Image (cartoon, rainbow, N blue to C red):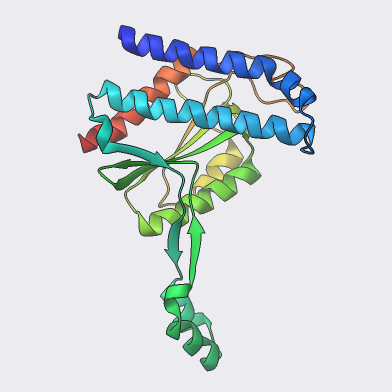
Length: 237
């Protein structure tokens, strides 16, 4: 590991430690109308988004990529209506004609948390979660399925601090076998090759949140995530 990479990874660990150790106090001290739980969830979500964005930047820098070629956003993309649905499923001729006459207005705005572009081309999408369970995974898979109808070549990732997917996603082993439920869901989205990264060891426990029962973020997982992203981004050097 290069000294530059080691320094950047150490900074990410420091960022995580600092935020998680004060998040409970900050939420209790907040005098706004936001609920305590909402503040906690929002802060953890922003923390994971920060970690994810830094991993992307580190990966591109490690490849020697020009920073001006890289951009990251979460803007919504217009997913157009499926024409075959209009032509074959809409039975009422007036409704069908109305939709076809106004076809440009029929779309769904969709994005994932971190969308990576090289030279303006959308190449990689990452959904960021404090934790994920399988009901949430269904939504993530649907989002990527729809995005890939318009951007078929994007790489798809889920970055989660903790896992509640079952199986061994939370064990952080060199080889992950996954869980029965998760693999079953993945099997129905053949156009989505979702890469799942977990950063904190041990299954998420509802009664032991990390801001009260601190668990460290794993350095090896951060490095692994950087190398995983590098493999996708090196295709665009």
